[in-house]
Image (cartoon, rainbow, N blue to C red; front, side, top):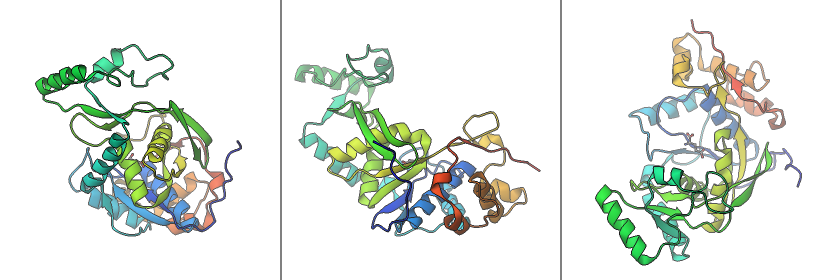
Length: 312
Ligand code: GLU
């Protein structure tokens, strides 16, 4: 099939979203992705939601700073900000839905055992090798006993009945990717990111997922999970990552890369939007609304954004 048309301008009742992890201040790459998520949603008449992915890696005060930074660039959002830490009941219900359909099994493997196990026949490289998928009840009891000794809970995994799934991405077109017996709940009791994201997007009416393209390979398994939960599969729009001049993913250690760092360097929020606009081929933008008015999604540079900043 051909890539889907790049038209984003028909009104719909759905929503787009931005879903940061509150692990530190957002850097220019994060801010660019947030602006593009907002622009794509607003352009197509969608609501725009914010969700804080605070199941782990939380830094005190980070959520508040992230929200302030997004607002400073001119973004607005609809409804309450959702926090994953408050959504446990919804995740439990999703796991229960799968369990009643015999699509969940307990996994007693350690990370090392998974890495060292021979891969299952026909399984794609890197897939869970299936060690705990079809154990007898006696073997499960032995596994649980082992977990008790290790003071861990068994992880819960999906009993996947497909090995690949296909999603539509605004720029990448039709993307085929691996689905394996992915983790639904980790051994430390925390719900897995792949499940949380699917449950939360659906609950918020999100049908347009814009995010960085390091998550492109996760999209097929998330869309498949949505299907198994009886939820609509969203459309995706994966944006290239920001990198430093050496080509490595942009990080705090690359210098003054956050909005607040830039302000300390004497720039304004408008200057920072200006940099992001320039990375999209739009010189002279001062607020996110300028990007909204002028950006054509079919012009998105498909290579990573190389961020090379003058530090004063
Ligand atoms: N919380 C993830 C991050 O900050 C994004 C997850 C998503 O957009 O699906 O990288």
